[in-house]
Length: 111
Image (cartoon, rainbow, N blue to C red):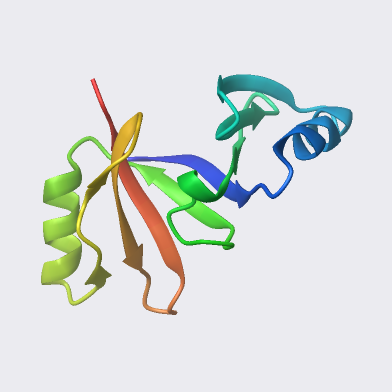
């Protein structure tokens, strides 16, 4: 398990990329006009358009796991609210809700 990135809603991807690069972040990955990952070398921020936002309009923590199905099953068994895994263009992900009511994306990379 590792912190994958923080997903930030992007209403104007080009303007937001410009903003964050002016802050000193560098573009790590770009998926067309849907998603851009920026980093400071340690932390990654993922700017996501509406099609790539697991919970619309919310900034979310994203946690990468090795086995999504096992992780989701373990969280569900502990009583957590767990969404069905859905395929994304580069990962499979599930939105889970922490005990404080905060949604968190748990995902595994597609190979």
